[in-house]
Image (cartoon, rainbow, N blue to C red; front, side):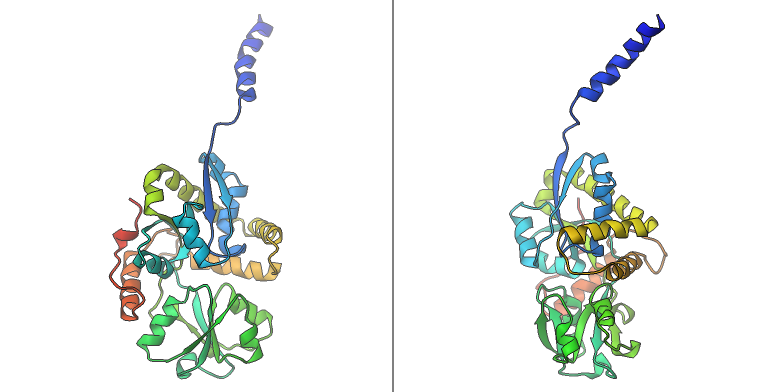
Amino acid sequence: MIKTLHRILLWPMLLLASLPLAAQDTFVFSPQWSAQAQFAGYYAALENGFYQEEGLDVKIVHPNTVRDLELLLTEGASDATTLPLMQALVLVDQGIQLVNILQTSMNNATVIVSRRGKNPLDQHGARVGTWQAGFDQIAICVNKILGLNYEWVPFAANVNLFISGALDATLAMSYNEYNLLLQAGAEIHEENVYRFSEHGYNIQDDGVYMTLEAYRKDPDRAERFARASRRGWEWAAEHPEETLDLVMEYVERNHIATNRVLQQLMLEEILNLQVDARTGQREFRLVPEMVRMATGLMMEADLISSPIGYYDLIAR
C-alpha cells in the first residue's frame, strides 16, 4: 500500500519534470555603450536568473554608437536601452517618443578636467575634449550659460588627446575617463576638476528607456524587465566582488581593453551615483524637478525646441 501511494505521488512530479519549460518572452536590451561595470546590474539580473523568474529571455546586445541605439529602438531590433536623462530629451525632441521604465542614476557624473594648475571655468575659449557619441548636453548648456566659448574637440573613447597635451581640458565621467586619466599618470588636483553635480547642475544620468509604442504593446513585459533589473542592481550593491567577477566575464567576452582595477572603481562610483544624497537611498525613480531643470537648461542652450514634461517620459 505504501509503495503504491509513493508511486501515485511521484508520478505527477515525474510528469512535470518531463515537460518543457514554460515559454518565455524574449526581451532584447541594448546598453548605451560597450560592456563595462556601468551596466553591472543587468549582468547580475541575467546571470542570477532574475529575468528568467519574471518569464523573460533577455538578450544583452551592446551597440557602438548612439545612432545605432536610435535605429535599434525605432526599428524594433531592441526593446530598451539606457540613456542619460538629457540624451533621452534630445531624442524625444527629435520626435522619438520614449518612456522611462526604470531610473538607476540619481546624480550627474560629468566633470571637466583641466590641465595642471588651471581652473576649467577660467579657460575661456579652451579646447575641450568631448565624446563623439554625444552625452555632453550638460557641458554644452553650462558653456553657453556662462559664456565660456569652449572649442569642442571630439574624441572616441580614450584620454590620449588630453595626455598628449592637445587639449586644454576634457569632459570625463567620474566613473570612467576620470579614472583612466589617473591610471595614465595625469596629475590632477581637485581645483582643476569642475563637477557639474556640485554646482547646481545635478541632473540624473542613466535610466532605462523604451519607445512608447513598444511599451504599450506589452506594459507587463516592460514592468517585469524593470523589476528584475532593479533586483540586479540591488544584488550588485550587496555583492560587489561577485558582481565584479561578472563584469570581468562580460568585458573579456566582448574583447574590451580594460582591467579589474578600473572596473572596480567604475562599479563603486556607479553604485554611489545611484544613491540620492537627500535620502541616502537607492530610489530608482525619475525626479520631476530634474526633468524641469534639464528641460529649462536645454531650451536656453537651444538643444531642444519645446518643453518636455515629467509625465511625457513616464511609462503609462
